[in-house]
Image 1 (cartoon, rainbow, N blue to C red):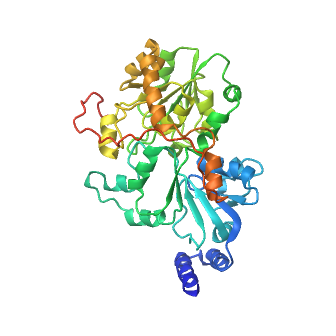
Image 2 (image 1 turned 120 degrees about the vertical axis):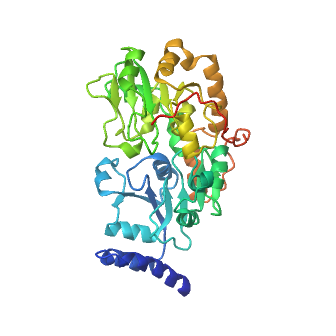
Image 3 (image 1 turned 60 degrees about the horizontal axis):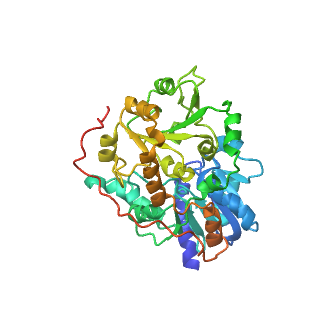
Length: 421
């Protein structure tokens, strides 16, 4: 035990070499010598960006099923005002933060905690992730196409701290296994806790969200949620939103939800009452429930929204560039969840022709849901809490969909979607 404590202290001391930070970390080192608090859980989402995603859903279920475990959220200073009332928190790198991080038994996040945080003997770390993957992740992305991406060793060290990895479906379990190898963690293939609300929401939930957004009853609501491409700084992701609104007509409203990397940047054309920027809305799940149709590109929103069994349109004008540059786990043109368009004109035609929800689109959506949403019964958060915080063996989860082999991306796909510069 003495040798182990010396090792912990050595790791903690390494972060004190930066000028001006020694006093901050002295408290941390001292707290590391105290016993682990068996009834303390620390939560974080998107590196301290706020209260959301799978960690928030697990936290809420833990308050119900494991009230003896105190949950504390780690947030950045500018995110405190966005926390719901009654949620206990610590501000990142405050004295309270270091006390919590040194003493907690449980660490639950959809990203990774800082490398300087010491995982003590007996501590438990849960990696919830924040989306079913289409693009290559982790080591898969770092080594794609013969790359020797930087950060692989550091990533594997972080993975080595995980005790559990949450998976929404069998595809995710398979993908995490190669993206984050060698960790020895247990895969919790339970569905996504953040999607429980999509199953359990009251019938009028979506209508209340629409009213709060100022949307008149009877409007068709289209949620547009593009992903981050890396090279493209344009929030709209190649889509002319004003033109799309015009083609949909005055009885439609477009909600634009940009990737969280773009928060604070305008995502909708100014002066249009028909296009609303909802990037800053605190719960994307509310927006799913308010929407009649999802339009996205390669974002993981497609996997979550499919739980609702509502129309989905994939807008993929730069698929050839994306799949060859980023690498993907499957070809979206072969396995999309409804309708697909490669140009703005094609997208408008999908709505005008009714292909957005015709028989072919419904068949594709059903196949997509069987593959990716079979576990989404509204009880994923409960399963995680029972397994991790209560130590129960969970055996009542739904049977998973039949395994689908990972599809290699074809090298000879016809160049029907031109890469845009």
